[in-house]
Image (cartoon, rainbow, N blue to C red; front, side, top):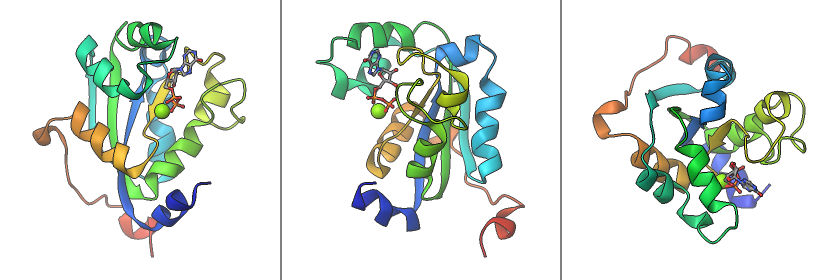
Length: 160
Ligand code: IDP
Ligand code: MG
């Protein structure tokens, strides 16, 4: 792993996770949410949302030059998505590991994509790739009043 991500494992972070339209259509919303919930991260934002084209373009602006970009925008706006913000120590890298490789055929069994998907263009879930993008994407997809700060009852059973 990249050194800056290993260093960041000690920090409380936020990450933006999204069940993509194929995950919603295939009835995988509960399954995907529960992977992060069971791990022990804290849910601070959650909504079902039809993504407007402009927001999809802003979210994926770094991929604008890629040949698959137009199809990616069509895919993400093709039906409702489930937007989530999760918080925890090292959550950004940990969530990426729970999600698995971009290409589901390369993703390890036990990961979300490894267990539940077959094609890169239908890989059921998004996760931020850095602490900076975790903050940026959470702020992009959620308004301030949509996020909750709370203390889960299980907190002392997750961290000494
Ligand atoms: P990531 O979602 O694992 O971070 P990125 O490289 O950031 O992967 O690409 C964003 C999304 O764009 C992917 O999750 C996938 O939906 C789509 N994508 C990436 N590469 C391809 C491709 O080669 N063909 C079709 N879609 C792609
Ligand atoms: Mg990415």
